[in-house]
Length: 113
Image 1 (tube, rainbow, N blue to C red):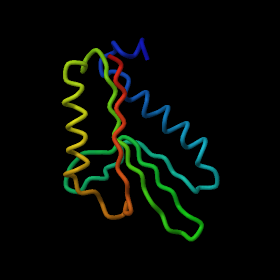
Image 2: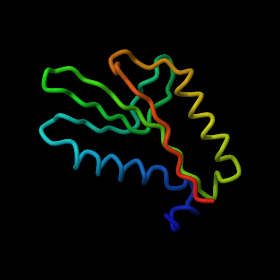
Image 3: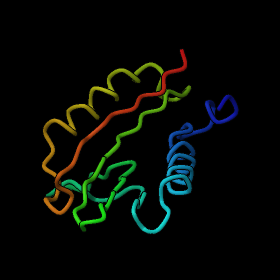
Image 4: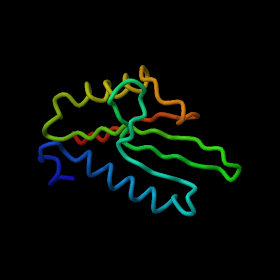
């Protein structure tokens, strides 16, 4: 994390990949859980969720957990709080595609200062 903190673009992409990989490996047995990144879940925009976890129950019903991640880095430390609030607004005001319903939305912010 320390090495990525100073990289242009920070370490959020790395966190996305590692979380998706670990979650899929741990929960994704037998096609019950699918973990994807950067899905266009919001209607009428090009905004995407950072992580989308879709769980299919044995009866075929599915539910979704959508995650917005924010990682503080040297490039955004001064505006980190504002960026987290923008993700809150994105979830609170966004209309996501009904194919993801029922859906819970989460924001996970990794601050380091």
